[in-house]
Length: 322
Length: 197
Image (cartoon, rainbow over all chains, first blue to last red):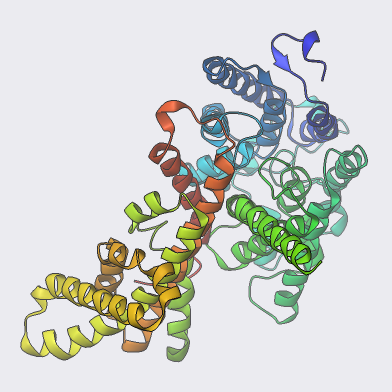
């Protein structure tokens, strides 16, 4: 690591690669929802870095570049009309209680970005679930020529909710992201490209993504074809909401995930996929990604521990028979 | 929902939507102190499942067959505690006679359970929510399994925490309560799935 070059921030190459993968999403967020996204991103970054700096000082540690990833993921997961102060509350909670109380980077149990997101999700229901807007339309420049989407369309519900109620969407729109939704979650295409990049650069392990997507499609398919009310076509479901975004960029976070074996990765990813489907279809929340991820985080250490014990036992058995 | 499916709904609701520990915050004391080690958590967790199921059954019989006909329902608090304590003592004695191994594994946890408020809580919820006998059993079993899941997850997390650098002021109960809060946050996701009581 080239820690010497930078006295303020400790740079971690794998984390920086995740950031590169997120840049197209940032551009897309501006394209669809206007320049205000940059303001949100800047405020979240400033507050996030400041929080980590203040906390890290007491440990006499440096700010790590992972906080940038947390900031970007958090900002991209917010709805476009988010008031700035709510974003601030969320990122402070995420950095402090998601990460720093455990002793900083590498020690945290829960993903900091999703911790902050969950906290504001349950605290400020209306701004986070009821005030989505249509993307900027009209000129060819779209959001590049606008500050925010026009507020006439406020309180549009997300495609996830509309589809559960029976509205049909073009798969092309879901795929490209020209839809109501959070800043960065709408474009499946860019998320997949980013995912390919971080897997190729070995910043993320593909087992996580595969496990999440496969378990999601299997369970959603089973529910859809057995005609459960509220379950929509699994392929459409995959491209709506923030499932892909979380599966590619958050489930693969090596710190809060099950990290020792591929078996652990598959179990962990499947918990996430299955829980997302169950919460989406059965609970009162429209989107289950946030809670499903916290749920998976919560069981990751136990999974790791049990697999390690199992391995140890098998080795002892082998040693005993040999 | 059909009448016969209701006990099953109660079972799942007791595990997830109305988790006795993470949504009612009952049974906190032994949860905080015992979750330090995975092995003890496993022992206590299984003991809680067993005792919760059995005492909810017993207390249902005691409440509806003895207290209610006599018109002394207001004594339920003290009677439930006596039933739980007597049951746990009895089980402890039987286990000691029958199985050395089981006694070594569960023995020390049984007295702890007598004072576990989650056990009493389950019996009281059962009365408040007017459960039938079968519903009480599934509710007791589900609550026990929910408690078991929570303490196992916490024990796993605390294994991982041994390598973390927790700030001094937060060591022990402090960080455990913060993690419990985060776990409860995760369980918020189940709200609205099943409605009971």
